[in-house]
Amino acid sequence: MLTLEPMLTLENVVAGYSAVPVLRQVSLAVDAGQFVAVVGPNGAGKTTLFKTISGIVRPTAGSITFEGTDLLALPAARRAHLGIAHVPEGRQVFPSLTVMENLEMGAFTAAGQRDWKHNIQRILAWLPVLADRRGQLAGTLSGGEQQMVAIGRGLASSPKLLMLDEPSMGLAPTIADFIFEKLIEIRRDTGLTILLVEQRVAEALESADHGYVLEAGRVVLEGDNRTLRADDRVRQAYLGM
Ligand SMILES: Nc1ncnc2c1ncn2[C@@H]1O[C@H](COP(=O)(O)OP(=O)(O)OP(=O)(O)O)[C@@H](O)[C@H]1O
Image (cartoon, rainbow, N blue to C red; front, top):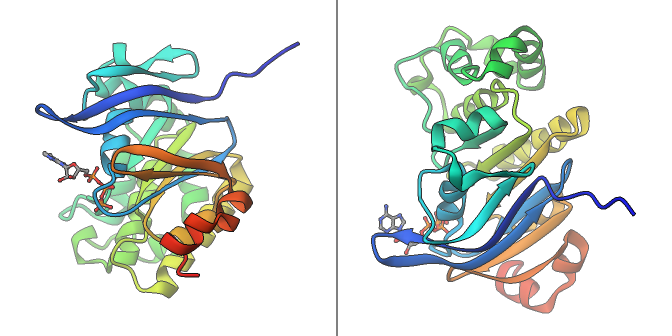
């Protein structure tokens, strides 16, 4: 019988800063086309998890595989070319470049260069505010607009896996809701695989198909979104019910 391997697999990953472990034996899998959310409190290690996948932090144990390739054998710069886009916490747009220049910077991969015309049309259709502000310096945009630039920049690389680190951070609830709706729309239109880290647990588990709860560097719960939303621990600790 044919069994499909997940697109991304982490097995027993241990990682941190200097000698201090943050991730303690984290295992996680993302299937192609899936929308997976990782939720958990401040300091649980969510950002460290993303940095470990994209190669900024090097694990001391465990394995990470993307489409059958051993990611740990590749430097960070190579991983983006495999189709992994990391939209970082705090957006990190290039403030002195325009919106369009920021989007162009995202198209640094071979696939991003090849697909630029198609990608930019779609990005501007999903996020029309970026078309309105294409010549504006990104540093002068609102937080929500900067988040849209960061998402657009990630999409411009033609990723297979889009990793988003707390896209709602610091945004008013209505703007955060708009961002979640856009992610659902982009996913529906493209079938893109999405890995999302979020502190807005209710919205994250409504948008995603599958979730992981990360606490103190360990996966303490995993399941499809309905199961997690119905879980007593999740309801009490994260949904205020
Ligand atoms: N560059 C660093 N050097 C040393 N320790 C760090 C560094 N970055 C993060 N840490 C520590 O690693 C732990 C996990 O941080 P991380 O940012 O991964 O958590 P998080 O779940 O993303 O939290 P938040 O939701 O607040 O961003 C924290 O105790 C933090 O202090």
